[in-house]
Image: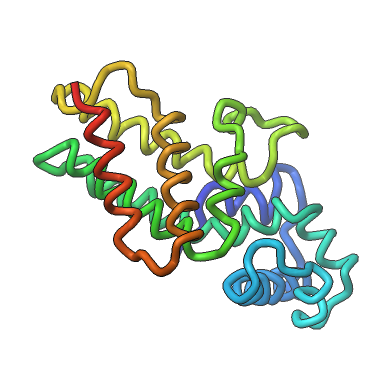
Length: 206
């Protein structure tokens, strides 16, 4: 998969030298081990263990990823690329509301890949996610394109008069992440996410 704009920016900031081959290998190993650790232990997995399994020191991890959210944002980048591609496909769907619902289900699926990710996404401030300053978290910057893609799908459904005009993408994404979190906390009920999403969308109709 080609790097998303956020990936390219994170790996080689504007005006910076391209990453050395050994540094890139270290970064790739850290990401691979982080995916395994997050899948096994959730997003609170030990960063020290991730560094050790990647055969680097904790200082190397922090040079690439200054904090846990930076690492989580980098891990989530692949899902962002998938969600953006799916949103682009859904823009031509014949039924705008169905397209929006299908895309929200994709978000729930990706948010459930790592225990704790849904909670992290809920706490991200989408209102600040477009700002490019030092106070904006890496996860928020990573999620900014998702907000924009979702806005296009939502507006299309609103123009078709299948979703209320007062619904915002920020509220809709927060509800979606809350559903993902509920599904995460109730693994013995695989149909819960679909039921909650159906109930939510009934309240969105004009």
